[in-house]
View 1 (spheres, rainbow, N blue to C red):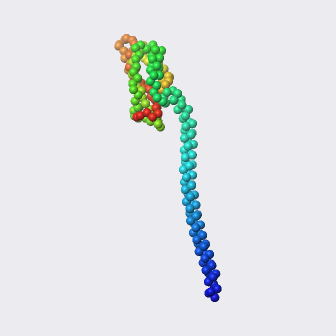
View 2: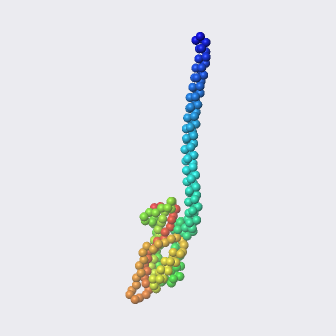
View 3: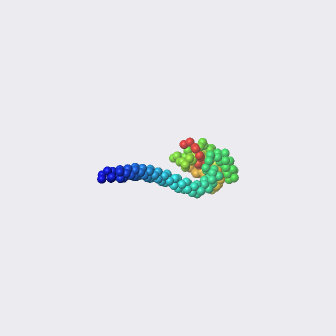
Length: 187
């Protein structure tokens, strides 16, 4: 009687062994697929972040490119325009009839404290200016006219008006600075 059961039991055991091997391989394959899925999901997350960042960068560029190009045209972004500044000072002084107008455009220096905008460095070029003016309004007009001219942006660092009591003209001693944002300027 047991002899008749040995063959079916052995067959059943073989089937169970085959099923166990198949199941273990199936579990291994499922684990491998899950790991690949997790890896792909992580890569997809990184790609989505890059797409989001690129979209934000494109919006930022679109928002600021027009203003950046305007600043390039005005001479604020780019190399200093010493020759143009020299010509502007001569023209504006002559237009206002300033007597004995003289100026010295000093070497360019990095702005203090250091100021960087991305790869652009804020640079300063100081100008020492002196002239004889009939009254304060003429000098104020000169500063206003200089602000309206391109290239660049300038600020007045300090000015002094002096005169001998009751005598004209006034003597003006002034220092102002032309500012530029320059790519790759050494700080």
